[in-house]
Image (cartoon, rainbow, N blue to C red; front, side):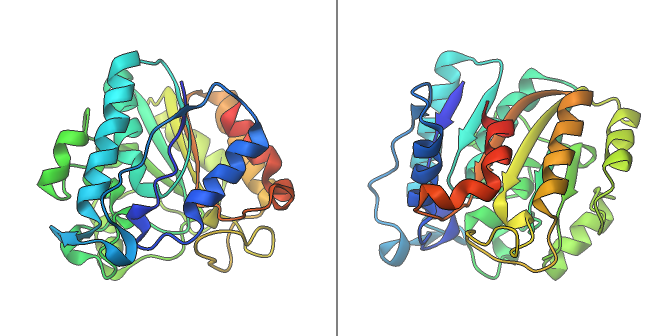
Length: 268
């Protein structure tokens, strides 16, 4: 199942996140993508914070729609164009319920593993993994099909980590190397008995000098060629049952040229 869900409310004001997702949808020109409507509840500068989560009501409503759509169709695979990283709580928890040997590869400059009370921004796109672990805001738990374990999470491109996030990563011995080693990643997954993968791809994992049209630009990211090689290696060694492309903000299709191969690898 292919889903277009340009959620931006999880990033606070979300400048160009929705239109950035629309640009990728235009680029792919594929009518198979099911469009999930966004909430009309005020958000952004007009939004409200509840449970230490900005735009909580809008996020909760539209993620509920996403969950209902997936429940209605029971797909074997999911591919999502988004949107901010907070949307991942629904597809990842669904596929985790469906596949007992699932691993999650989190291509991202950020750990996205804050609790609401620990988050400096109170933006939900910094909380999805903590929510998926069952350690986030309990009012969000009904969006989950299942919960992850620490051993399932593997980061690629991580380099901007809040202090309390680092504590959680270390406490859980969560895979987060400073330098990408594809062979080591594959070997780690194989040693854990992981058979299926979900590939979360936030474009800010990339080196900004390679691609800068992202919601955040964080220096010393992974090169586009290395990201492509990593995705291909994972696809060759495991069954990829889900993937996403998130937080690109360009409104110009031509500017997607540098990341075109990544988009095709993850969405085709």
